[in-house]
Image (cartoon, rainbow, N blue to C red; front, top):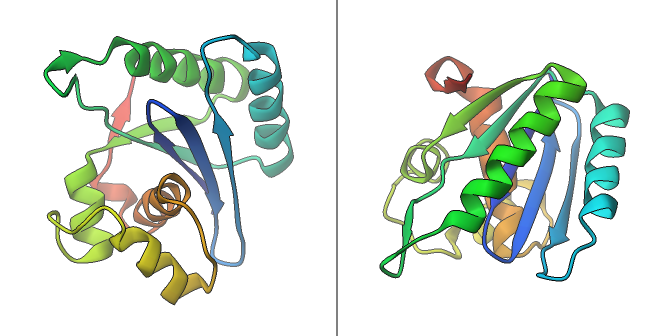
Length: 151
């Protein structure tokens, strides 16, 4: 079974494809001046090549520093529609506190704890977004029955 974990942030989107035998990840930096077609093409090609069985996306927080984060909401909606329209994969939503508790042992761990976890478990060095995507994918693989499907 292959799961694609996705971590959305205001700066990057990180992807991790995880199965029992393989781990592959990549991150796409966002900017205000376009390149949307290139990003869509990269995502499409990766999904076609790896063919995940399902996808887990971290829930977004509506408020960031007192403001509603509309950009992230738009990106998530576009990403989910792209995935469902092209690939028919089920897409699941997971709260940041839930995957942190299930994978890292506590919902209240520091931001860089996922980097340390990934370094220890998979022996790779990543950035924060990539390590979060790996943890999200692992949570999907291990706890799929606890996830909420996005319809």
